[in-house]
Image (cartoon, rainbow, N blue to C red; front, side, top):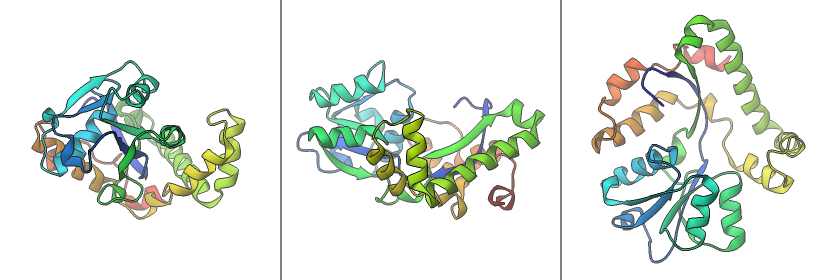
Length: 231
């Protein structure tokens, strides 16, 4: 996200990622000097993995990053043993790797702290749109949050919708993911905590220049109060 280009509005849920590894890697610190496959240099995977390794006192520059044109090629690179680690994104990648019996998981952000306590998915909007159309922004945000509640309350219905629309052809996989992800998290977690947590990690290793305090002051969560997001 380019600074000033968009505004974070609210958190949705945690738990999208599983970190798969090959070989004798047993812990995050073992990634030092190893290869990690991602899509692009500024990809979400790279930032998220950088935050993970920074949390355990490692510098992301100690990792050998392999870039590929697409997520499918990144996973295939890992499957072929050409990379030591790969960040699988739900819904399909972790399930496919397990079905192929490739690699093993050393971090699951659905269950493993502290990652399970912070949002991986947030709603954001173009700054100019938020400023020009605040009412439309609120309505759109409310629709996202109602959809999150629906996923939590009626996962079977949501899974059928995903299959009907062709987003995920396998009903059982869609249902498994919907039941595992904490879609009610937006009601009791503060998205600013997520920004502060990751910003501190990335600031410590020099990936971002702004301190967490300055970043949050500059990019408040949509300018909406907590009560307005939860109504």
